Amino acid sequence: MTRLIITNQAAADIERLGEFLLESMPHEAIKTSDIVFDGLEVLAAHPGIGRPVGGNMRELVISRGRSGYLALYAYDDVADMVSVLAVRHQRESGYAE
Image 1 (cartoon, helix red, strand yellow):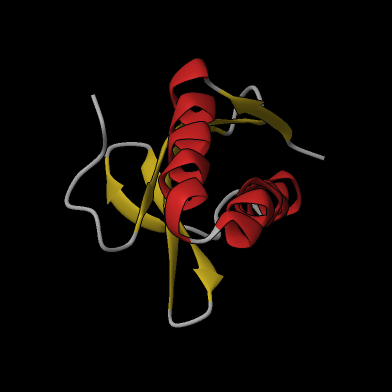
Image 2 (cartoon, rainbow, N blue to C red):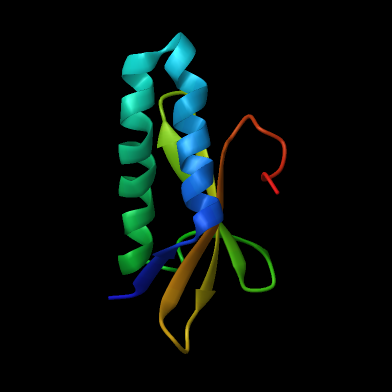
C-alpha cells in the first residue's frame, strides 16, 4: 500500500475550507474534512488515479454533491509515496500559496 503524506499546506487548506462553511452551513463544515480525508485515502490504494497536471503532479477530484474539491499531489513511484500538496474547492481559482 502506498504511503500517504498530507503536507502542512494541504492540512491548512482543509481547515480553511471547513472554516469557510462554518458561518453559512455549520453542519456541512463538520463533514468537510471527513469527505476530503476519505477521498484522499483512495490514493493509498490507487496513486495514479488523479489526472496529470504536469511533471509528477496529479489532481484528484473529490466529489461533493454538485461540486467538490481538488487535491494536488505528487506521486513518487520509487518510494511508493503520495504527497498531498494542496486542496481547494472546485470553484476556487488556483491553489492557495
